[in-house]
Amino acid sequence: MFEVKGATFAIDGKPLLQPIEHTFHQGKVYGLIGHNGSGKSTLIKLLAQQQPISQGNIHFDHRPLDDWGNREFARQVAYLPQHLPGAENLTGRELVAFGRYPWHGLLGRHTVKDKEAIERAIALTHTEAFADRLVDTLSGGERQRVWLAMLLAQGSRFLLLDEPLAALDIAHQMEVLALIRKLCDELDLGVIIVLHDINMASRYCDELMALHSGRLLAHGAPREMMRDTTLEAIYGLPMQVMTHPNGQHAIAVAQ
Image 1 (cartoon, rainbow, N blue to C red):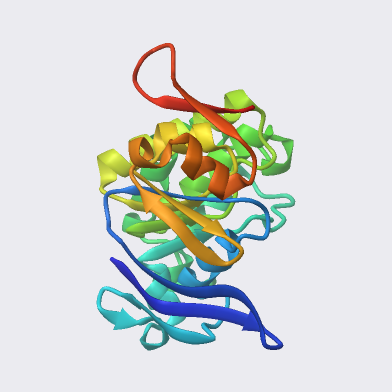
Image 2: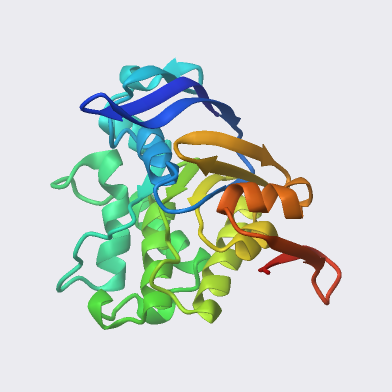
């Protein structure tokens, strides 16, 4: 699990993230919500060791992040940034195979175990049809599923996803989130995901964390967070919460 103990982040003395206290457990999907600039991406980058902590500590499996080597940490925690690296001239299977880097390096030969992990990740994400196609020719939703397959091939227990839905239409957003939810339940993964759509977050996450101006404003199960006054405090505009027509979860609309 991740334990965030008063972690902060500042640039040139300007605080971007105020002291945060929270614990993230394996087997749950956590949605980081809030307006732009609230600190969501900053927090997930601290968890992913992509930025240094200014003050406080973050522990993973009861060890400070500084005690983990890069490849050792990557065997446990996989990170997908908001702006994806280029994948020019790579097929889907070749991209997924990069997920095995933490286990043998770039020049190491793939073992039978590596090949099994790659094929398993492709099967879990139902990306067989994209395995031999160039990644750059895939649609946004297809491409995101291949990147998720790469993370699964990595064999990590936690996935850190920074706005993975930003460039997707609503149908592909639901497709990707449903897949993440399914993988979390079936593989006992911990997932921490930055989301902008509160209704998507409420539908697919176990717990929501709302940040505002670099502070942790509120957190809890979606049924606790989906309240008019709470959402107005988070987003700064009047919100009305109602029951979805299927009766299984709440939805919010701006007034």
